[in-house]
Image (cartoon, rainbow, N blue to C red; front, top):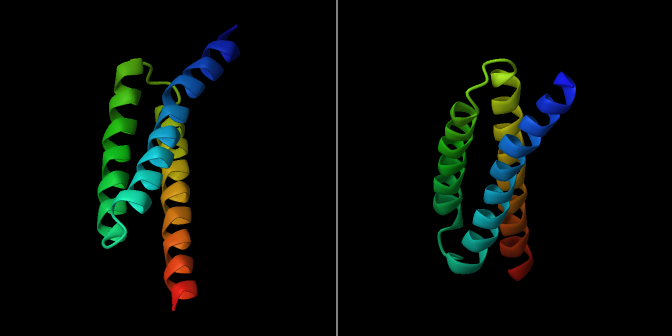
Amino acid sequence: MEERAADRLWWSSVVPVWAVALVASALVLVLAPEQPIAWLSVSLGGCVVLALALQLATRTPAGYLARVRDSLGGAVLIVAAAVLVRVLQVALSG
């Protein structure tokens, strides 16, 4: 039973950070094509704040570091993929 609660806690506190990182990265690439790196940095900072806020809101100390690691690791990978997309756009456009 505890394992189910831990899984539910992980899904409800880690995946939303990934979703925000994905949406924010897509919006930055579409709406700010001139300065995407600056805005992607801001969106990653927002993901850090969101991740910490969600983990504090769970009020569950067990697994805190693992959940923060997973939240931020996924967000960093998503933002890095967005940076790669932008680099490829610039390289292919000439």
